[in-house]
Length: 144
Image 1 (spheres, helix red, strand yellow):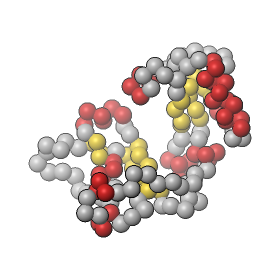
Image 2 (cartoon, one colour; image 1 turned 30 degrees about the vertical axis):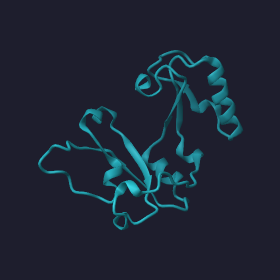
Image 3 (cartoon, helix red, strand yellow; image 1 turned 135 degrees about the horizontal axis):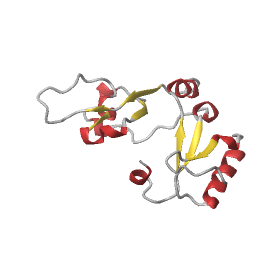
Image 4 (cartoon, one colour; image 1 turned 90 degrees about the vertical axis):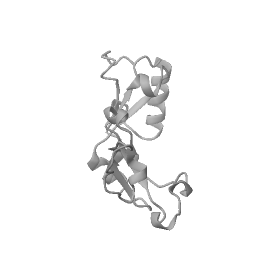
């Protein structure tokens, strides 16, 4: 997946769990919901039952390999909008990053300078640098 999403650039991936996710947003001023993406064939004669977040979690079947999990905030009544595309484009809310982040994987091929920058940012935010590991895809030893 690294090659699909970062295309040779340096990058990181965050590891969490559903329990950590729920705890991290527990004190948020907004109601944060989450769901696995629903992969639907828009050409199918019968589409799955619609839910309040349905347009935000649907994807086409070719992306099913991603097994995506999405988080979202609905700060409005979705039934009050005539067109889903009239929704706000972003919503800020608070999150406890120390609860959310279980681990961080650094993309294969990332430079040592990039890794040092990631470690510096984490240290400034009060994280233990041991949270960072090379990508398991990379297979290289931890040599930052």
